[in-house]
Length: 169
Image (cartoon, rainbow, N blue to C red):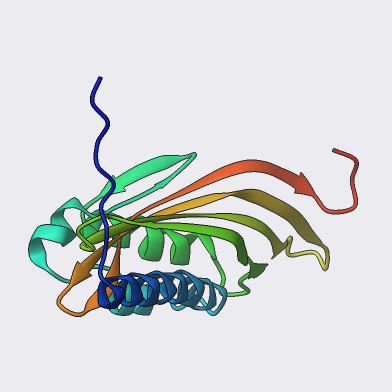
């Protein structure tokens, strides 16, 4: 059995790779702020892929569904979400990510990242009370370089546990 030779990089290539990983982490963290502020349409415009061939294969998945192509993603992630908010009262939510792990492909053209999220969502019931939930799970994101910028290409949000706040689970 032959052993594959480990690729070596020049100092300049190593610096570029470290910089790329930091840029990728920054994009994933920006996505959290966009979500908290309900800037979903702007998130798709600013952080997601723009090139037509990448938009056609972009994807977003959750435990409840999987959407391929930017129009399908927009329909679920933006339009359905806005409709689910109902009468405009809205929700209070925070889904910070932590324990990030980013792996850059050898050619530096794609990357993948995995984060853990311990989030919360509070939705008014309409009678002066609210439903407060803890949500925990993994967020996996694939990135692709478009020109000089990194862009989100695929996202999977895999929920591990949802529990009502203040209850034993």
